[in-house]
Image 1 (cartoon, rainbow, N blue to C red):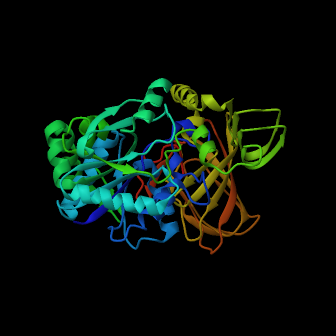
Image 2: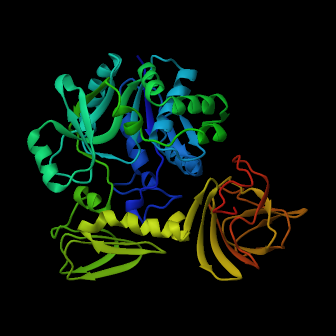
Image 3: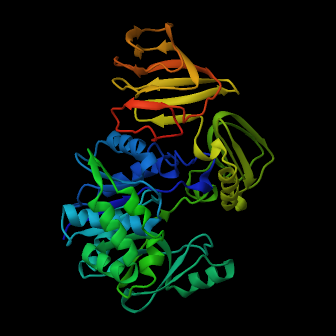
Length: 476
């Protein structure tokens, strides 16, 4: 039976704010080493000896960054990215992936479901565990990977293993005393959120316990659209699906579930404290990144992304600095970062959604300064890339080339601009920016107008398939 890796790359990783944002989430960050968590997961999948090219399930807003990171690895001559037009938790995502594979391959295929944002320290042991889980799935079992606990962890859910490796029960995150009892018992494992499912059994069991999800996602696949490596679930159909996790919708109800014991150095990096635990430390137990100066500091995590951070006399503290936010907390309160994120979301703060630097399919832009009637950005356009053909109702724009060459469509005129040259885009003028060169194009954009909201755009043509309502956090 074919093994089809499916990587679930949705979510935002709110407990890793301010580094993780809604539009630049945890799985796309490089937290350990040079590769992002998504890329590390793909590298691990590539070790599986006879697995099919991966399928990656992502939110619509992360499609271009995801594709860029996959292509950067250059491991897979073909792959597929399934786009979720809206979030419905893991059960619809898993069901939709199964329906897609059934339609394009075979119902006999086994799905290997992996979160994109987990760390596995021993990939060779991971490959062995996958082979064991695959054998169980080939016998018709819905198989979950139970992580062998090495400490009484209160931040994870647990799975209790019964006779013949059957799933006896799923247990919510316990208090410390209960977690100690689980560790001593020996039959409890951390719930990893990793599975192997034979498609036929998966859909049969889902149809028994969650038929609304099956029906909605079958229609979402049937009415979905393909654009190159992207397949977009039909939005209206997916909106009709209940929102539920695969644990609640299926695994806690089915009697076909089994546990495969997994001991391969797993960590979900669900908080800054979790990152501190697995990262390399200095002699004082500190995890340091960026421009940091320390005096009498022990067992701290300090990350400086944009400016110098100096710390004196600290113990067990986390400090994370980005260009637009700083969070400081005792290490044992790291989980409470999500409370700050909840407040940011409620107040509709920009710091919830994006960093000052925002990545687009053509490059990136960084907001340097913003006021009531003007905004300044640094724009970087990749070689050969171009922005959409567009116009704005409420602002003028002035572009100054810093390096590289720009081809600019400004109304009826098309011009080439080199370093230190500029152009002015009047309000209401159709315009487009392109980099025809072989080095990155960098320019400064000054926006002036009565309204500078990023939804002030009319998009006429776009080589990336975006519509006028796409990417409303960026007018580019």
